[in-house]
Image (cartoon, rainbow, N blue to C red; front, side):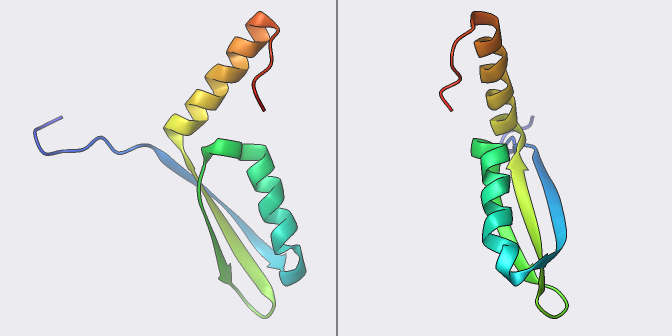
Length: 82
């Protein structure tokens, strides 16, 4: 890396399309529960009619930390703190 450059974290995104208005809160809650601290941002955009697209952005380093914690807990038989 050259001087002045910053190391940007790896960001992944997942889109869920065709979600009706009344299911947006449940869908977001499910994604947060599944991905936990890996979630970097959530974007909701209106599609056609009353259907929406939800985009969940996750951060690579956050995902790796979560994976390492789970592996460590599996080895020691301990809790992950979740």
